[in-house]
Length: 438
Image (cartoon, rainbow, N blue to C red):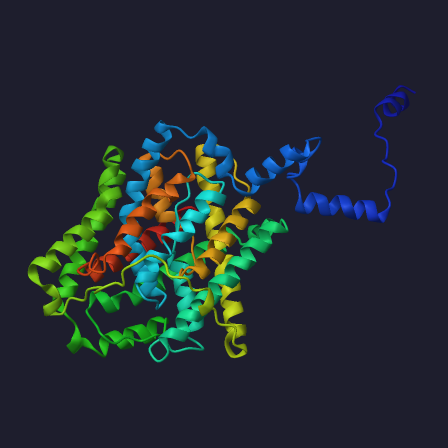
């Protein structure tokens, strides 16, 4: 009897059955709106709802009211740190995508300004990335030869960026951010490791001073192209390249062994660019087989909305390129944002970030920019400074890029191999760190 009474008192009542429509509605709401973003709008007057809506879409309206001079000082230090990478990195990634180098600067100017207004992470530094650049070059080269028709190739790159942005914004608007979670850590690490290897092999062209190189990405084709041109190798480029690569790796090693000397690794890319530029300028190394970037067209981003290409012959490839690069860059951006939000103990809305990334690429495709997302190496530079306070980090450095685009000879003597070595050292670091975290 005692057990029967105990079971009667502590028994759990079975909930009444619900109609299928109500059950489906609850399940869909739990799947797509687990955080209920409309909760803050309930029981609010229309004027307040309008203000909350603007703050939800444009977070700068919320944190901008709390911005202070102390925040500005901290953001300025962090901004100067990542600005030292923006110019050489943008140029390198644009070349990796088979695009004009100036597009790397364009892509480091307008899209980050969009993210500063719409993004919710105060740690992310956005810009072009190696994997997105590599995928763009690999997929578009299947239908257009960049050497035979560079204008068409450029227009297709803008169009692919537009479709990538539309995909990212759509996923965010319809609360489909959970799709990115199905990309496993092992898949991302393997993909990034493979991309690091492929990209590094492609940079051997510049390090060895080769004028002609294969467009294939497999190891056999690259090795065949390299060793079939041994008579064209330039020892000057190889020596300078190895010296700067050793310097970059040594700076990283010192910073890891002595954390108080973190500034050595943080400033190593900028220092190497300055030293490389001086060496090339003083020795006139371009006359001795050392490749340089050359002149860049001056001026800020020209409009490219009229350059979008929707020809049916290329539309399938362009859409496919946009989808693939959009998903990969989105996964990378969200992963970087979440990791740094966890490190700083705050929360970011993944769906809101998707909308910000999408608008960033949509606006970028209209302003002569190609695919951009959160870049882990520049963001890690921010972590080293320990100074960042707000999303305005994406505003300050852009004025440096703006100044660089105003002068057509600003980057005339930048050492080309130096940019490639920065890229190689970053990619292998990313690959090794990913494997260690598995």
